[in-house]
Amino acid sequence: MSDIVILSGSPSEASRSEVVLKHLGELLKERGFSVSHLSVRDVPQEDLFLGRYNSDAIAEISTLIHGAKGVIVGSPVYKAAYSGVLKALIDLLPQDVLQDTPVLPLMTGGSSAHLLALEYTLKPLLATLKGQNLKGVYLVDSQIDKLNAAEPIIDKEVEQRIQKQLEYFAEIIDRRAANLVVKQEI
Ligand SMILES: Cc1cc2nc3c(=O)[nH]c(=O)nc-3n(C[C@H](O)[C@H](O)[C@H](O)COP(=O)(O)O)c2cc1C
Image (cartoon, rainbow, N blue to C red; front, side, top):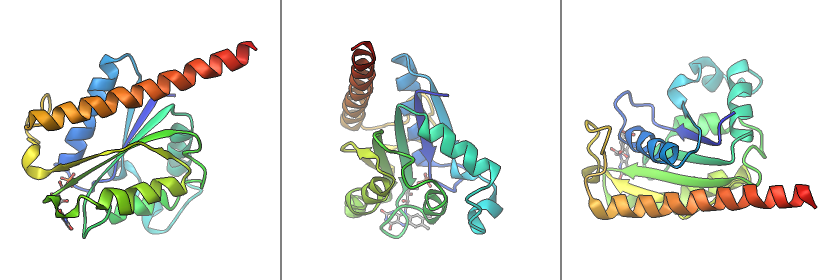
């Protein structure tokens, strides 16, 4: 079981959002967290298309997400919302799979015109799984160099914003873990 699960909702082979998610994973590893990456591309297409909510792959993903201390969910903007394939996967997960879990939502889009897709589509979707949404991150394509996996964020200001969000995310997770220890000791 990993501390953090990062779920990529892009169906693209060379995905900008996934490069950014991998970068976030590396930054969290530097902070001492164990990290697992999941992608919609790894889920059997038949499970998604035929709605096989009781398949082995879906059970495995549910267990991984359920056991995580924090989850990051990323998606490209497709027609002003999250990708359809991310929704197809989320539809198959248990309703409370993110219960009490801090969730950092992330979206990448071709332009800033759909910045609010984060607020009006991805966050409400994650809230239906009872996730506790953090502010989240929205990046436009021009801010990402998908060929530079080590440093994919071109814009320094955006990189700083991401670092700040990760700091907050890590703090919440650490604080929750500390609370749990105190409660167990009482
Ligand atoms: C089918 C499709 C629909 C898209 N719709 C939008 C959109 O409505 N708004 C937008 O800003 N970008 C849109 N884009 C651009 C992508 O959101 C953007 O390039 C994103 O970074 C792609 O992420 P990915 O490489 O991880 O798949 C669309 C791209 C595709 C392929």
